[in-house]
Length: 284
Image (cartoon, rainbow, N blue to C red; front, side, top):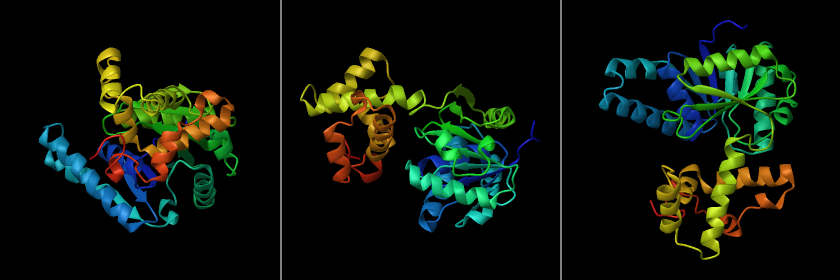
């Protein structure tokens, strides 16, 4: 098995990337967070500081722990910054061609024994691994949103992923205080294959006039004991992300049950993406 991982690279400073960076740094890992956008890096760092600050307020960590965690994060705007890291987690947008481009570039930059993990929430690990020259060291490491609060990491092997790679990533996830669960490489894995059709069906209920957003969410919260209704959850995830995942499922299975609701498509076209844009099924 590979030596204990202590240095991690994270590519993408968005919602998932900065969340993974916060958890990794808070667990003692040396982190370099990379994003082409300086603005995204600044926002990401501010959100990490805010997240760690909340933990201090709740007395879950000390102010010294917070400062130490922030001190373990460096930022960069080019992929060369991850050179020499034994594990890099890719957390860019959920689009096949963007991820392939980033992974192919990382494959060139990293030492040949480094592991490339992707935080994809739906795309085939096998397909992503194929653009690299290290398919046995490519793996899915799917964190849940919000990363600091959610315990689960879906760990997904591609066709060629080695046992050593799997074991190393499983241990790393545990070292971050997460619970790794092995699932197989299929569109949407388990989490989104079950979750997205439910969210899509809730949107169809709204589209067909079965209920107002509040009513649909109340039924699922009070009747099914969900902590959050599916429409509020879609707003949290981002309607564009929901649509991307549904399209991966629809394309991957060629099954009409995964067809995105026309209302979801229309809202994404209008830029109503949920919390991040201020408007979705609710206003923020």
